[in-house]
Image (tube, rainbow, N blue to C red; front, side):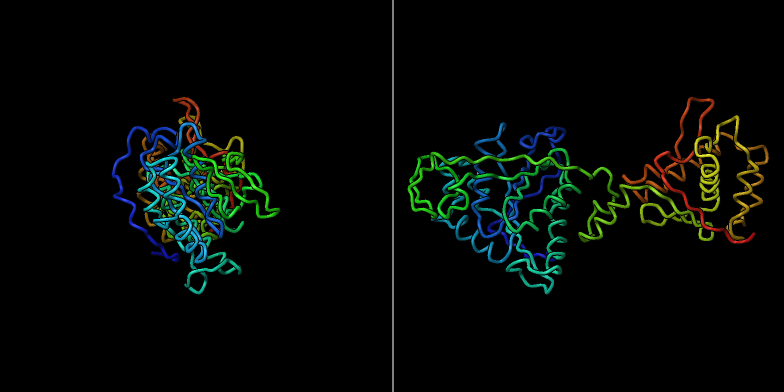
Length: 400
């Protein structure tokens, strides 16, 4: 189950295999799987307050089909007693008063208890080590939930320690899709954190304000759900980050490398390109082609591209091929025979296609700055490295 202990009160149902047409929209309420995901501390009221706002104050209503709560050991106990108890739990009261549709959903609430660095359930996040383990778990939960095409997520950062809310928001920024939302619920005083207030009841009640012992009526309670805009970085992440297996710090480092600034280090001695922190090894001819374009770009950034068929100097390419280590030049005779009449369109297009496929396979969404780009209209097409590549470093080649 990973680093966090997961508890199920019943189960969350089968995983649908296909996504309906509704999944083409960014409207969260249109998705067949609708997840309320929240971090929770010692005041589980934020869950029912958020649920109330989603069901009663949102147009169209976002009625969750699943609820998943990330918390500590103490928080989990409060959730079970104050929200999930079959007789007095606030979830049951909410469903009966406001939305019977969520009764089964609330009963199947999933609780993720965060573990600490020692591997035991956390009572509280009090050390840097515990914080990093919690970060890894929160990032993995968000990554896994956003991998489902049929789902939309409403994530609440209102509960738990500020660290937990920050991590949930950060994870959603990394992995969030157009249909996912980040929210915070606001409840005005004196109802905020009131031990007996979980949502505005259908029939008003009179409570006693803890601070001054004055009577207050729940009819006066105002629950506001704030939609927090966030930067969605998912489209720029490499495929390996979307597939999982990375911790929080590693995910952030990989994402930063993928998002820029975009630099490539070219290592002729090993026929390698180092792009976005990843090493790509190319076949000798393809590597020499990339090296050729890189050197042209370094010499003349604005005019470094080759123009087919007017300006494709085969001698320049062969000079770059001949600069490779001896082991890589075993194909020299075959390469020279293939280019005896110059570089033709088929050979050129094959090089571009092969290099770009290798780059895309290795980097996924982050490949764009490192691909070979074709521009201009035929027959005078230009081929060169992308303008978004900000830095090119070519290491010294071995002697011929």
